[in-house]
Length: 113
Length: 111
Image (cartoon, rainbow over the protein chains, first blue to last red):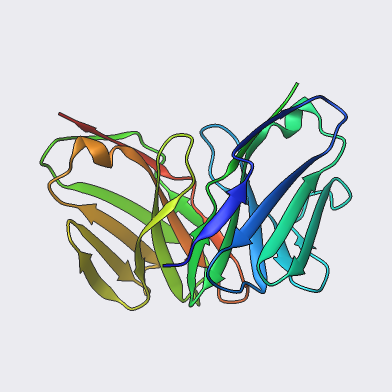
């Protein structure tokens, strides 16, 4: 089946710094990838839809200048959390769709101290 | 009204029993429905997908879809402690190219 690789799995950063998270489709091409955020004991919340070769589409309430998304190729999307603050600490998960089925990356646990 | 609603639980069943998880959705023209299992600290993994009214069985899992009632459920037969997890209902909304998730139902299977 489809495999989506996400890196890093865990990251701790200082407040005010930026963190980049990578999401790769390993055995298929993904023109669209999705970025979710999950706070403890809450469900997945869609942050943005990443479109290869064009601008990402952000959900209401998600700051596009803070969460930069780049989808430069058919197999790679990146999410950069800029000027991170403790309230950005969360579990970030990407997903890609192939044949109508959505596959998730393993997630990135971000802790901002 | 939330797009996808689930009872957050927790739902507790004894080992060997049937666990029944329920989900309702708001978009009447939704086409694709999924159940994901998520262990604590891990990303969701797909258990079942269902697209047509009726039942779909895969091993110990049965997904049921009723589009008229906008209702989808997941039955887990012969529940095992390893089934203890949060189960997420997901719906691919017709007008969107993305998937919306319910809040998840936390299931505990007691030995």
